[in-house]
Image (cartoon, rainbow, N blue to C red):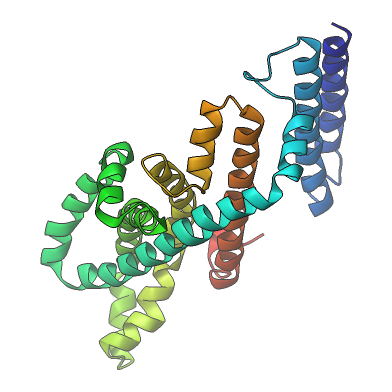
Amino acid sequence: MTLVILALIIWLVAWRVNVVLANTAASETRFMKLLVPAIFGFTILADWELVVKGLNVPLVILPPPSMIAETFSAKLPILWKDFVQTFVKGALSGYFIGCTAAVALAVLVERFDFLRRGLLPVGNFVAALPIIGTAPILVMWFGFDWHSKAAVVVVMVFFPMLVNTVAGLGETTAMQRDLMKTYGADPWQAFIKLRLPAAMPFIFNGLKISTTLALIGAIVAEFFGSPTLGMGFRISASIGQLALDMVWAEIVVAALAGSAFYGAVAIIEKGVTFWHPSQRG
C-alpha cells in the first residue's frame, strides 16, 4: 500500500507543477510546450510502475513499464525484424501505392463529372467495409507475405485519400479560375499553379489520416496469416504464450513508428503549405 500512496503523492505533485508551468508567462515557448507533456508522460509511467507493484497485479494482466523496457532492450533484434516486415514492407509500400493511385484517380474524377457521380458513392461504400472482413480475402488472394498486407493498406488508405483530394481540387472559386483564363493559362498551367496548390491542405489531411490507417491495416492483416515475423504475428503469438511484456514491447514499437510517420508528414506539410492560415503562428 506504501507504493500506491507514493504514486498518489507523485501524481498530485506533478499535477501541481504542470498547472504552475502551464500558467507562467513562458508557457507558449517551445521548451515549455515539450516540458509539460513530458512531465505528464513520466508521471503516468511512474504511477503505472508503483501501482502495479503495490497492488501485486499479475504480469499476465498488466506488466510494469520496467519489465516492458527490459523486454524491449533484450528483444531488439526481433522487434527490428518485425518493424521492417510490418511497417517498411507492408505499411509503407501500401501507403505509397494507395495514396499515389488515389491522387491520380482524383485528377480524373475532378475532370470528368460522370466519375464524380458514379465512383465517389461506390468509394464511400467500399470505405465503410470492415477491415476484419476484407483482410482475410486479400490475404488469400496475395499470399501470406508482406504483399497481402500492402494490399490491405491500399484498400484502407485509397478512398480517404481520394475523397480528400477531390474535395481539395474543387476548392478554387469561379473568380480564381476566370482570372487564370484572362492570363491565358492553359488547363495544365491552371492545374499546376492554381488548383493543385489550393488542394494541398486537403491532400495532406488525407495523407495524415492514412498514416494511422496504414499501420493499423498492416498489423490487423497479419492476424489472418503471415510468415513467422511481423508485429501482428508477434502480438498474436505472444498473447497465446501469455507473454504480455512482449505484446507491450510491440505496441511501443508501433506507437513510436506511427508517431514518427505522422510527424514526418506534418513537417513536410508545414513546408509545402506554409502560406495556408492553418500553418501561421
